Amino acid sequence: MQRIYLDANATTPLLPEVLEAMRPFWLEVFGNASSIHQPGQQARAALDLARDQMASFLHCRASEVVFTSGGTEGDNLALFGAMGPSDASTPGHLITTSVEHNAVLKTALALGEAGAEVTILPCNTQGVVEPAALQAALRPNTRLVSIIFANNETGVIQPIAELAAIAHAHGALFHTDAVQAAGKLPLDLSPEGPLRHVDLLTLSGHKLYAPKGTGVLFVRRSVRLAPLLFGGSHERHRRPGTENVPGIVALGKAAELAGAWMASKEHAHLAQLRDRLEAGLLASIPASGVNGAGAPRTGNTTNLYFDHVEAEALVIALDLKGIAVSGGSACHSGATEPSHVLKAMGLSTERARGSIRFSLSRLTTAQEIDAALAIIPDAVARLRQLSPTWKQS
Image 1 (cartoon, rainbow, N blue to C red):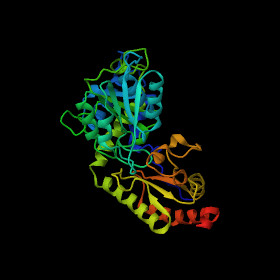
Image 2 (image 1 turned 180 degrees about the horizontal axis):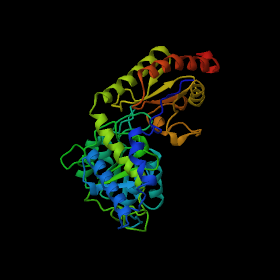
Image 3 (image 1 turned 30 degrees about the horizontal axis):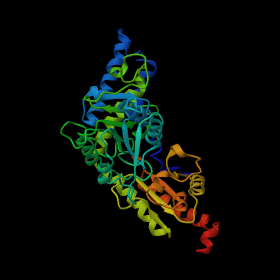
Image 4 (image 1 turned 135 degrees about the vertical axis):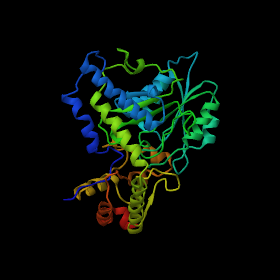
């Protein structure tokens, strides 16, 4: 059976070039990067090269790159580190949104329980946070604004440059979870670039064709960040612990490859494949539509609703046919509650539960899209025949 992987927003495959870059650092160059002997210094040189590669990808200083274990740690470090302690006499105010990944939403709730004031901004029906809503929510004690760059479920892109400028004009720090934006959208954090008002930015290696357990938190050099962990002086005292040299080497190589890929024609080709899949499904499946269709979206992602179908049943049916898709965030696998992102966009519970995310990778081919278009409509039709609501419609 041909396997077709359309769940790249959950995780991406490791690119062969990335695997080859990290291979020597398991058995041959295995030193601790903090050791002063030759094996240690070889590891340190590899670490420095990876930091330079990531800095080039983000258009920032190498000293502003903090290596982490992934997006969740990066988001937690950004929010807890920037907010600092709060109490009844000096409560800090955090603003985030209703369409965040849970790595931000649950961290915000934890900060609220610890004494911070938390505002969760709504979005419009396309999943976009209006700049005016942020402007109205700012308070004198607002310390941090955290807004996702590109949504993991819908691919909807927020106007991050504008939102960050509003936060900065008020004197607040600005963080963005760019896990689903990295490698898909330009991330220019230079002092003159469009993201110059972004103070903190999170990305994850396994969404960038690097290994799981790797990530980066960009910390602009003017930002003071309290650590989550305590121990050594690694990562400029911001993230102690012996560095994962093989993983970091791989992430640096993945960033280098991502920059080259985004500059190539293949980058635009991926969006064309997504559009081909989307148009084909809408044309062949009645009572369907695109969630967030009117908003800017990342070129690899489409989230479609199929009325009178349960997403979980469709995911299983397609898996049996060799197609891997998702009913939403991979972090919610097995959850019975509908997507909080889709609910925030105004979808009914039934429509949210009947929505499927298709996310393509750089390795997706036109032949795979055509094969998927031959399978998915039939799977939806078969499930609808089992639905009492479909028979009544």
